[in-house]
Image (cartoon, rainbow, N blue to C red):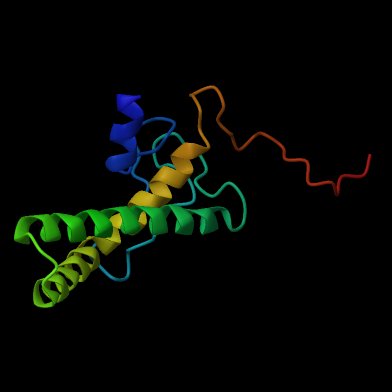
Length: 138
């Protein structure tokens, strides 16, 4: 379990635990979501089907609400009160922090989504596997 969490947070391949899920630096606007088609080490496909990462939007939403809410309530707890000026300042700080961690948050949500579909090393999908699309005529 700890190995899986480490792979999720360090954005590594769920199969070999060595290949990077993303290409380039996270804070380069051109490379925020650039992912290779396959793992550079074990050739595990990262795009299992068209639109696979649409579900990562929900993970990203939950992640950002959790982080943002935690930051906001931490600021509120530290300043002890619902003074409107302090709450507005807290909201600006929360927004700033969320904007700073946005690239990593986006990548982390994709990593979590991909790792959710891999239970263990025996359930992986290889290039030689055939997928029944229903269009096969026998």
